[in-house]
Amino acid sequence: MIMIDKKPKTIGVMFDRIAPTYDKVNTILSFGTDRLWRKTAIRHLGIKKDQKVLDVATGTGELASLVLSKVQCTITGVDLSREMLAIAEVKAKNRGFSDRLFFINGDALKLPFTEHTFDNAMVAFGLRNMMHIGDFLDEIYRVLIENGKMAILEFSLPANPLMRRIYLFYLKTLLPYIGGRVSGNSGAYRYLYESVFSFPPPGKLLALMHTHGFEITAMKPIFLGIAHLFILRKKAL
Image (cartoon, rainbow, N blue to C red; front, side):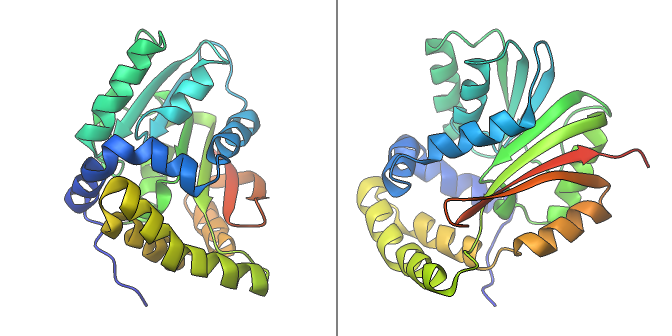
């Protein structure tokens, strides 16, 4: 069992260090498919005009920007990394989204919002960085309106044994090398391998989501199972 330090300060500092090259490395490592995955998540979430949306682990704001390019809504992005948010704010301004996209430096396990604030929530590749997934789900449940929906897009290990071996080799060997060369921080990309390898499989995540008050309306494997998309709906207790 790999033991990983996921304290908020540790995660925030790590992403601060790779913020300048984060988008570039994502595009390289995913062969340009990460944008398509985010579009799939948005399509399944079905955000409507004038709704309020929470984007957790917003990073440089790519997921939020994709939403706003399609829907006239309001999005609040939350992230631990100040450097990532600084980039996100510049991008939002350049794209003309500053009046509808707002950013807060904060912890997803201690969201600074009252109950029933958001119509929808979303998180792309940030769930595995949470110290306590159950606590995160409780916070999202608290801030969503009744029947509010959440999209979770996260890496997973393929079920097919051959594909899993190939993917693990890529994660453990090639990804830290490429990510390290581009970003100057191979440690952050070794962490990516460790966090994916030790992350609960989709079946366990489904059970946890049910336990914390959510109905799963869709679950979709992405790109041969190296990622999964979950669409959750808040049930009334």
